[in-house]
Amino acid sequence: MISDRDIAGKIKCILTDVDGVLSDGKLYYDSTGAETKTFHVRDGYGIKAWMNAGLHFGIITARHSDALTRRAKELGIEHVVQNSADKWQSATDMMSAMKVTPDEVCYIGDDVPDIMVMCRVGLAAAPDDASIDAREAAHWITRLPGGSGAVRELIERLMRAGKNWPTLSKEPPC
Image (cartoon, rainbow, N blue to C red; front, top):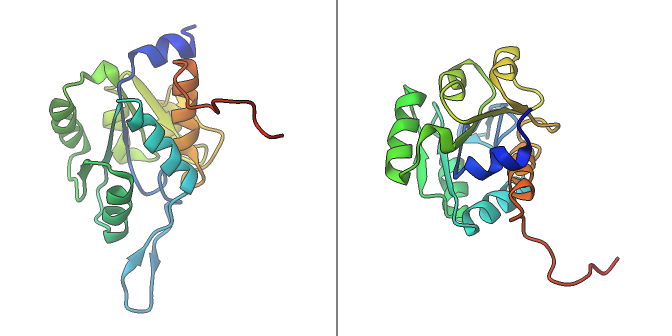
């Protein structure tokens, strides 16, 4: 069995789906018919920690969402593809731009459209509440469901294994 440390040492990039991973997968519409989404703040902290460590992060989704555009901008995520008709092609383009190979990539997805990417990267992950097919394609399954900190859990596991998770510089107050 390969250790988390051995796996983490190879991963330089995380690519993620949105609905069912960064969000809970439910579609919400306000009174004007505009779609809204909720994002977990812990995912945001994890993404920032990952990128601050000099690692790559990208988002690929088959839908378009103004809320996602705003959240990605808030977090400083430069690599975002919305309305992707072919997630593997989008991932390939993103990997080329980031100068990483599929073996250096972790992809986290929750449903059938994600499996093509999951099967071709170094580490495939899925949230706890992902579809059966996505969980079967995953190397790692988070304990948390999508939209509830699953991405943070994945990032923290990788970074702790690589010994680069940010910690307090002094003893905690408790």
